[in-house]
Image (cartoon, rainbow, N blue to C red):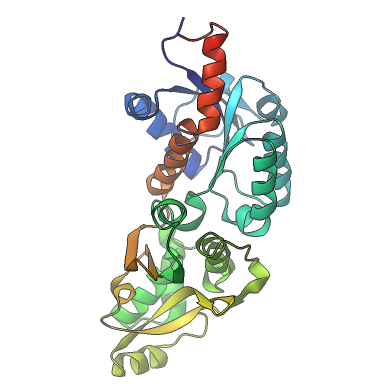
Length: 340
């Protein structure tokens, strides 16, 4: 008999982030065992193309194009969703939660639009739903707001939560290049998508701020509640005007408590050069928090990329493995004589 519980995982998606998750779990299994008391095994992976070349080598028998093989498998305890999408993905995640499976997701669209509903279904079914990677990559801001700052009254959360726009504005400021020139360079380097609308319009940052505000202020904040402005109209003339004022332009997401209301916005803002966020450049993200007891704190790091995002996903996986729900399941297995 196995001395340690083996937790079986279904992985939805084997793109950039999914490959990073596989690498982390394969490269450091002893660390996960030490920190959680569990062995983990990815038993099935949902992919669109069984024959596609990927960044990791996975036995073909673990791959499937049929999501039901994962959702309906009674031996799979946890679903990791990194395939993206919204409505179809929502139905898959709902089905997983209703089947009693814990879910970890990096899907900001899903959480921004349906997070309240999914959290309710998770609670009703006694399972965990985690989505740290949906906001700022490897930066553990949601966990800090939920745990370390839970007793405080948060006054304001503001941050740079989109690496693409921060890269563009940093290059425009530092090199004097035009918006169109830097956008083309960002696309060539892979920082920006072929269709960059979600990033440059502020929509991506708005989705993340809706999630952040919901956690920070303990109330649902819908995407429709976020005032949004992008960076498409930022010119060298505006950057020069900001510089003359002793400042720099950044795309800032901001959530403030104003009386009984919470105001959330995303848009270009002139920050004084001595503001902590003014020093955050290139594709880095940072979130600045102000609380009544805390005062000020800032969280800084890579907001995207294979391994930073995978790190946040595996951090959420570890939180699930340590959860009371998992411990209860293991206790029942021990009583049944399955585990020592």
